Amino acid sequence: MAEASVYVRLTRAQIRGQLAYRGSFVMNCLAQAIAQAADLVVIAVVFSRVAALGGFDIHSVLLFYAFSGLSFGLADMFVGSIERLPTYIRTGTFDVVLVRPLGTLMQLFASDFQLRRIGRALTAFGTLVYVLSTADVHWSPAKILLLVLTPLAGAAIFGSIFVAANSVSFWFIDARELANSVTYGGSYLTSYPITVFNEWLRALLAYVVPGAFVAYYPALTLLDHADPLGAPLWLGWLDTPVALLAATAAALIWRTAVRHYRGTGS
Image 1 (cartoon, rainbow, N blue to C red):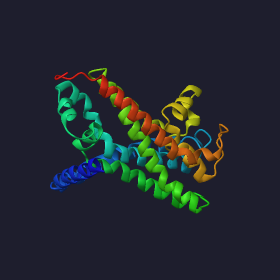
Image 2 (image 1 turned 135 degrees about the vertical axis):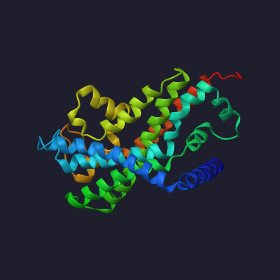
Image 3 (image 1 turned 120 degrees about the vertical axis):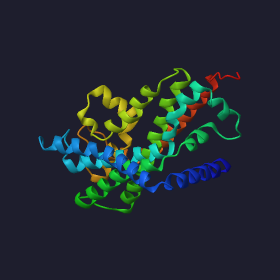
Image 4 (image 1 turned 45 degrees about the vertical axis):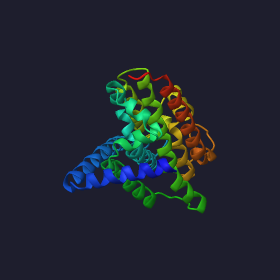
């Protein structure tokens, strides 16, 4: 609880500093929103040529995109600063992190909080509102709960991917591009139905990463859309338990990686 309090205070201070230059902040948010919207253009171009993609119409694909984009945007905003880990290790700054009386992950999360990253989440949220206002969804209290939990569980899954992917920096000095290919690549892949990928990539996304629980399975459950691959609809309700398992696995990988670290004072 004390670490969370410190994280909130550090984050609040950084937000105040970033809002001091409001013009720059608005432009940065707009740039993030446009970057996220570029994927929307790709989807529009694809559906100008085809009526369905992997067995899904444009409304379903937009729902995948919205859940994925919102989840990634939230994860990038709250834990994306861990991307600076390779620099900390290379310059020896991580030794300072180790001697402070706070958790290493929490310090890295709070080291460079960028509120401008909310631009990505806002674009995805706007798409989500549009899709839900036009799609034929049979609402129930359970589905409303699923709608609320899905972006949070997806953010936890992406956050776990951020931590696990960047942990390789303890073994490889400059693995930032490798980590980015997993995190940003994962965001791109989860924006589309897994039916468009080949079998081994579907297995990777569903059971190893597990990106299919970010958007694909919850969206199928929300739309009551049968899975072309034959998976049951109740898989969509497992996004939160899967997110907890992913967070636990990421924490174990992080702990192992930190123990492997040999800094300047070791």
